[in-house]
Length: 206
Image 1: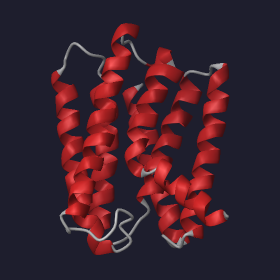
Image 2: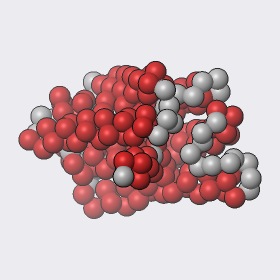
Image 3: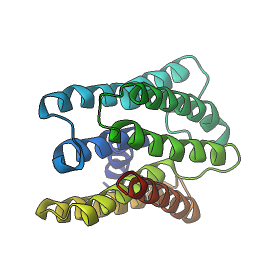
């Protein structure tokens, strides 16, 4: 009973979903966090979903079908290296794309830059050590929501923070239950993601 639930949490809240959750929060849950006109938000959000979730997922599936990796769960350290390098490249290109759109709110490229920097660090660590990518992403989400909660103390921010905490705890427990990571790999990913995004988004809004 618990294993299907743990697998569902792992799949539904995979690392690739984190930029979608972060920008969904910025654009829709805390609308005062950006200066983007309402009519542009949905279109930009679709671009973010495509470039940070759907395109990387297609690349991962291509690696799996091509025999480059054995599983999309990346259970072995060696299998994580090529996918993470490709993911880093996609994120760098996405950041560059938003940077060139000078007419848009800088939060788009700056937020992507913070997340891309976190992915670069994660990829570098992944070359030698299997740190949890799930918890790196969730730590980042928690850091962003924490910054937004302090800067924009709207009533809904309390629920965003509580939801992020519950989600982080649930996915961490699932990864441990599935023996996908040791506790130190979970804690290290959570700490790095949180610190990078907390400091990064504090810089953005400073």
